[in-house]
Image (tube, rainbow over the protein chains, first blue to last red):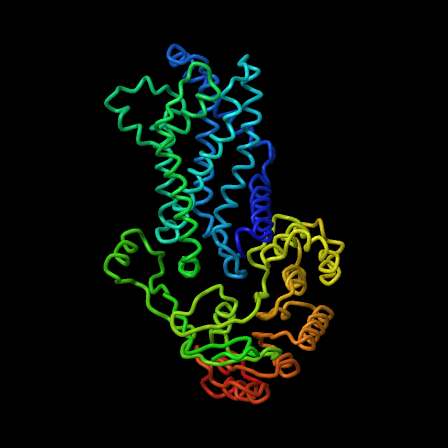
Length: 258
Length: 261
């Protein structure tokens, strides 16, 4: 099955669709959780930090919600992707198909709800009284960069997790740490220059920065960071897919041994 | 050299699995140790070893043998889901396995959803799937259950979904692993008829089965596997005779488990 064949895309679509459909099944609010979860997180963080950060950030509500939606896409997609090969061992045992599609569909199922959240987010920003700016049309490009980074990390994590089973637990801790080490709910200006320099190595800092530059007034764009984040993301994606293609038998053997 | 009439060819094929010797899962320090030093608490288990045979197009091979003899491993090798640890596997044509249990499908979703996933996994395109769906549903006899949850079906009914999809997938080489054992009499008849049609239309088939009737009636060749090696390859009746003789021999696993009549 070649990536340019229609059957490859039909399979990607089917795997993504079913993964998405299964996710919220059994919960009372079902699909609404997609929107409810970020909304509740936003409410909690906003209530906690508004009085503190309001002085440093113009439009703190917009700053927070934009950061939160982007961060959550990365966190959800990677944590679902990391166990995806193990969870799909039944499929791997029974059918011959390109294994990278398992990771693609895991990320794709989160992308689906993320795009919806982003749509609702834009509506929310309008409700806050923000006017659409010249940054809005740039949004698809930033979403694409974010997707590339998340997909690249997911491919690498999924591969590593078939060798190191403990990785998904470790990743849970790392993403929690990452939430605090990335300016999701606090402004970067609050960090001293000494630590700020280290934080610049965090790719998500630049991706969040780009989103905020597009959407939140008063946020300036630091394009320099994206100059290494975008090629890095592309490299991770290409390397990940190549490993999946060339080492698919190794992956199957490892998944069977789990 | 392989002639164009060859569908499958195996040369000295072996497949080795690393089997746990400890009750617990491998821990992080053990993984590190294995990667760094090559030492492992697992031991090698050769599911198949030194297997060589060739199957011409249009032949039907029945694979028989006790549980653990390597039948499923052989089928997975032929479907190119796994690679041999040693030796060579050549497969000429599009193939896929029909497994006994519809593992991998989604019990939480509807039967219809699972039909489309299954078709996609078999490499069928969307337009083609739409065209084939009525025939698949008709074949499976699940027309009334299309919107039922897949997990609510009995295992016999559930197994019909991947089977019906695979029957319509235009495979050159058809492989079935105990597929029809779970079906009821009527469905077994239908499967049997389908296999006969496949045979008449010149498809190559590999059937792993405990149903000696099926092997005797349908197969042109039979491979009797014992402990991961070929104990016999050739005439189906002779293969069944040898398998039967081994199974009822004093001290054999089968004889110990249930005395034959």
